[in-house]
Length: 288
Image 1: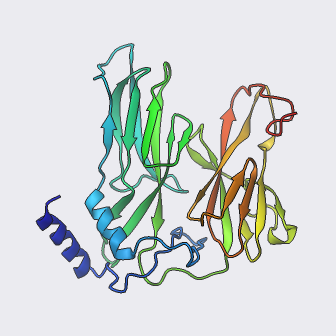
Image 2 (image 1 turned 30 degrees about the vertical axis):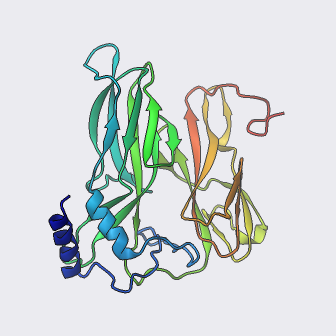
Image 3 (image 1 turned 180 degrees about the horizontal axis):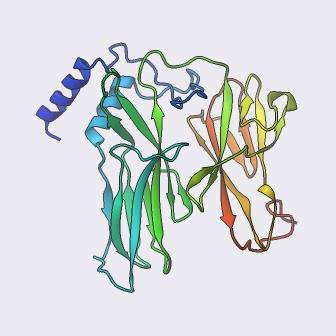
């Protein structure tokens, strides 16, 4: 984008009153009735900076495929998509489409960190979406650049997930809490119910809620399985935690998520769903 185009874009944002002259700290929040703003300690870029970055980035997608693939038995169709978390609806202006890649080759995809959607009357504020993670062929990649090897068989899906973020000075409020979701890497979607098995201290959580108060420091333990212990007929098995928006003091150890007092991160428990569950070890994931 040329300097003149940049100036034009920024001027347009100013005319729509979507730039905040005071450059407040931006707080993430889900655009739904259940929203929790991040604490002030988790500061990020200013609202105006994020808007400018989103405009400049647009829906750029960088792809590196070492050898040009042609349709045939050795090529794979990689289907690209961008979705809003947690609803799964398409992101306006997000990456989409298909590419051909040789099976066994290395492919690198790069999603924009921010996506920008101008205000649509009667709304007066633009919407900015921030990148969260890739789900590439059932594998979590939590950086904008996703490098992977094209599998030898089967279809290939690569989905970038985004979260709407607040870019006005009115963000924030509410008690601090960690909000959790269960997500299927296998089926590329948020799962119903809570991924939480237990919380310490117990008083911070009421089952089956997906939210845990962080008035005090808490330790959240994810369920090893959802819907009961898997059998050879299949099951939903815990893979890993992923934290978005929390301070660096939030820590993960296997099933356990430790969140300091006053923090309000989003925590996603990832699961694999099997139609035929493989035998991993006795007592998985706490193998003996």
